Amino acid sequence: MPSSVFPLSVFPRRSLLAAALFLPLAACAAPRTTTLSPRGDRLVRMIQRTGNDNMMAPEAPALMGITNEGRDIPVRQLAGEGTGGRYVVSLVNIRKIHEFIFHRRQGDVLILHQSDTKFARLQSVRYPRNGKPSVITDTAFAEADFQQQLAFWFDRIPGR
Image (cartoon, rainbow, N blue to C red; front, side, top):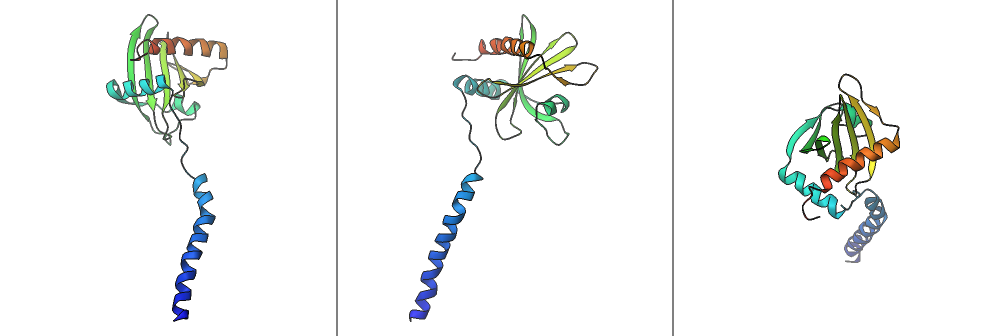
């Protein structure tokens, strides 16, 4: 009788030991959770509720680190008209986190800004109509344009 009990009692202890060894590894592999700012949360809901599904050409988002293996980027977009022209905000979720791309046209150039949901500008890109996109290195210009685009959308977010 003791020989049949011994293997049964060793197996649960060994499986418990193995689980204890691999638990820290599983915790490291857990997906990163990000929290939205209250305004970011409201803008995400507004875009999801009233925006349109669209596809963005991959060139400019690729400069921002957003890629879909060379294919167009699926986004949900919201557009509005203001004194500075047409403003568009795109909600991107390709990396399993919400990101915004704010864009508007200035003459023949499209100015795009990538932002997280806390509205920190991450990258800015200039995309000429008949040219290739390039990263905006003038941070003062990029930040001023980004703030102007944010102000436009902040006026439209419900529940300010």
